[in-house]
Amino acid sequence: MIQIQNVSKWYGSFQVLTDCTTQVSKGEVVVVCGPSGSGKSTLIKCVNGLEPIEKGSIIVNGTKVNDPATDLPKLRSHVGMVFQHFELFPHMSIIQNLAIGQVKVLGRSQDEAHERGMKLLDRVGIKMHANKYPGELSGGQQQRVAIARALSMDPICMLFDEPTSALDPEMITEVLDVMVELAQEGMTMMVVTHEMGFARKVAHRVIFMDHGQIVEDAPKEEFFGKPHSDRAQQFLSKILNH
Amino acid sequence: MFSNFDFSVIPPSLPYIWQGLVFSFRLTVTAMLGGIIIGTLLALARLSGGKALGFAAKTYVDLMRSVPLLMMILWFFLLAPFFMKITPETSALITFTLFQAAFYSEIMRAGIQSIPRGQINAGFAIGMSYWQTMGNVVLPQAFRNMVPVLLTQTFILFQDTSLVYAIGATDLLKAADNTGKLYGRTVEMYIFVSLIYFAICFSLSMFVKYMNKRIAIIR
Ligand SMILES: Nc1ncnc2c1ncn2[C@@H]1O[C@H](COP(=O)(O)OP(=O)(O)OP(=O)(O)O)[C@@H](O)[C@H]1O
Ligand SMILES: [Mg+2]
Image 1 (cartoon, rainbow over the protein chains, first blue to last red):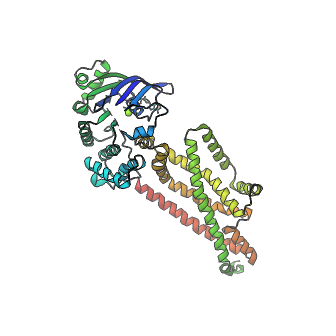
Image 2: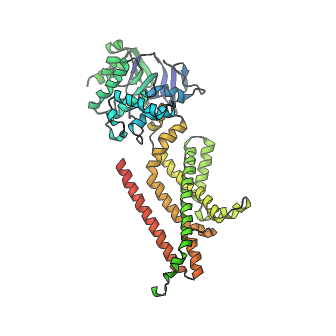
Image 3: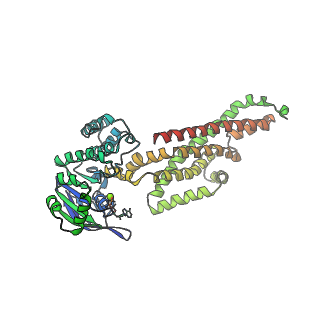
């Protein structure tokens, strides 16, 4: 589904990504972790072409992302993305947030988009807030809406960039629950997160990044059992010890 | 000294003054709408990253902002007849729109830049094109954030409309001047229009204050 091959990227003279290679198969859940500044967000943004790459190639569902001829909006319309800071559109009601992409991008009618939107809101438990504005919802609720917005486009895979790290602890679970459910339904997911509980529960593979490199890329059991690299081991003991 | 004043000239001149006021308003509204539309396009051109286009937009804005409005009004009225038949009123409408566009463009540019990158990414991520993201996500928010500043600019614009007096376009001031001269009561008419300008600007500035408060609550 997602193939990342020898990807390198620079910000000016600073190399953010160095020769990253990995893949996410259909139905697979891959968790990406690593210290702050290691390039996790950058890597995941390259997958749907929000950030260009200088070297290597990324192929999503058979389409080469870094090909100038690729219709990026079309590709992105079926790759869902959820951001750390939710990024709901603050000037639109919750239901409008879910309808806009369906109407403007997929060409659905308002009625159809609202109907589908309400179903998804029901699913993430926000139906009663459909006519409120994002600013009136808690962080956890906003993030669930953001997931519903991504799902409203009927994505073939989902990208998450630290979806719970801007949330208060008591709200993390409500968001993770939605994600776990998605994973169990067989959604293809690439998730940047430090929630190792989530990784243990639903991930198939865990990727550890450091200084722009993929240091470790292993099946979950192997990763949590005994990571090969010292850096991954140190990182794991740090985040698991609190 | 007020005993020498004769304000009885005001009632008979009202219809003509009204016409002048209507033109002042038309000029303000045209220059505001046209200015905001052209200004927004200029702002987008500057922010789009296209080198030639961005440079052209920047040059235009800098040029307009470094020439006094009165000079622009006079120059345009002097040069336009070489290319087309034009009334002072039309000339004023065009000059004001083009001039104000430069100022509105700076306001819109600040407004667009105030929208976080994450919002643009969110628009892109659901498959919107550049223009869809601008039109549905960035501009509506930028515009909302800038309403108070846009209104303040419009209010300066309204005050500046009196400058078209210089090319003989009949705005509020010119209408008052004409009737004043007709009846030999210029001072009375000037006092009268000053009051009108004051009343309008005062209510406009109250409105801007009110909008500021309202927007502050919504946030
Ligand atoms: N637009 C940019 N211009 C220049 N440098 C950038 C830019 N965006 C990110 N960087 C740098 O690239 C590196 C990787 O950033 P990235 O956001 O991908 O890290 P991350 O692993 O997601 O970290 P975090 O856990 O803090 O989110 C960082 O050193 C960051 O400072
Ligand atoms: Mg990050």
